[in-house]
Amino acid sequence: MRKIIKLVINPFIKYYFYFKLKSFVIKKESNFFLVLDIDNTIADSWKDLENYKKNRNQYFKNLKPLKGTIEHLKKEYSTYPIIFLSNRNIIDLKITKYWLKKTGFEIKKSLLILTNNPSDKLIYLKYLTDNFDITYFDDLSYNQENGEILFYNVVINEVNKMKINYFDYKYINKLNSN
View 1 (tube, rainbow, N blue to C red):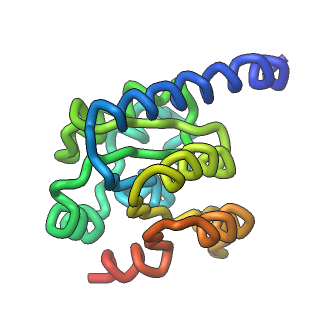
View 2 (spheres, rainbow, N blue to C red):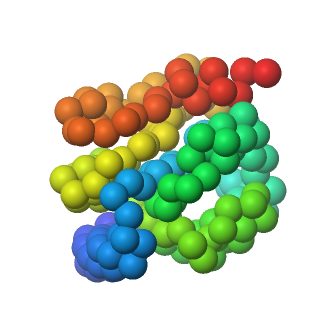
View 3 (cartoon, rainbow, N blue to C red):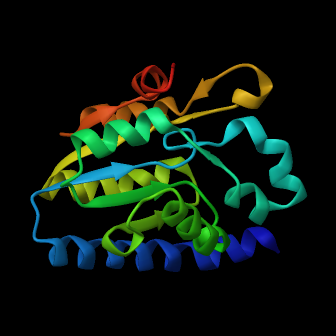
């Protein structure tokens, strides 16, 4: 049943966010955008994953910000319109907006897009890179909680083919190594 719901609802969610993206970039009248992943890019997500299963709202509400990344973004990209592009479930939209606001991001001046899987990010990035100058921060990693960091290499390879200023796991990790 869950698989059927995903097959039926996810295309509508993709269309909804794609429409929101197009509307957002038109309103901003900008030629450049900052695209940010959330988990393990601006939020220290993996360290507390056991609490996700216990209470997902509390988990998302209490995520610690990655201060090195956030300070860098505010220093270097403060004038860029922000598009958050995160692989989270649509039911986490409200709590994600809450966390972003709590962390100091002006959520009313930015756009939040949630994807069903990391490869869905490519749809939005393709549109953006075909039309604008994009700076993109995303670790595109997983499995940290099991002691072996793995990467979404297919997605990373596609991102690297795009005309995009991409900052990856190593760069993000360096920003937060203090």
